[in-house]
Image (tube, rainbow, N blue to C red; front, side, top):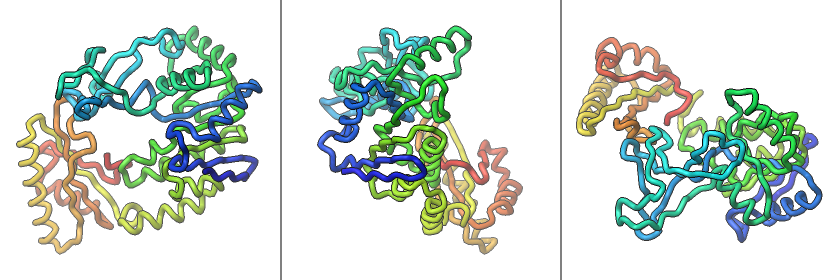
Length: 351
């Protein structure tokens, strides 16, 4: 099932993937790819995840192999430095944070079997699937920051000669070397799934600005959140209505601009010492709140990526209408900066 809306010279099709027999490409997307392939029209596929696959799963014991230094799954990456030339692929397993390499014959550390499957679809995996299902020769662009004129020329030449291109958001400004007839978002929900107070705002604006900036008339957005206000407003390219809904959501949860947020960040290589520091500071903060008769909300929580570069990371989130004076108070009385705490006042993100 999909909804097609034409507004401001744009045709935007929103596809409900929950109703589709295939969870990868909708029937509309398949028909469009085959039609454009026959007529030599150009398609741009956009995904905001680069390299190959997001994580790995053992199909024997359902264990997810993680990095030894960071609390994140090991991902499959493209090895060659000249990746943009689409030469024969060489892949490695690597931590996306600390870049530690792991054997290409990755085995499950839980059951020691080698029945590992890549989960998630990033740029190069999408390239493989499009080749297998539709016999498309697709050029992948992941980074335009190259360090030689020769490489820049090769990218431009490749874009000019390609009918099908996969890109991350780096092509969000239209290139004169590749003007697509349609833009397809195969896994649009990736940005929306980020657990942050402003994830809907960032996701909507990314899609909105891209559609507005491109001269392309046709768009297909595949989503598992068909009724979400982000996509329903995007259909009509209605920025004012989006902000109305977004502010209603933030008001219910006392998110900015209705209350201010601050993060007190702490990290330590010994987990027990981290807990002691956080627990002690939490008690001191609650004492100051009661002493000053304030209504500040205090939420101790591990960071989304709990362990990075061998150190454990924890936050204390503070919410109140006017936090600046309280932050000055705790910095002055508790001297938390001298205790290796970092203060992030009005952060752009909680993760």
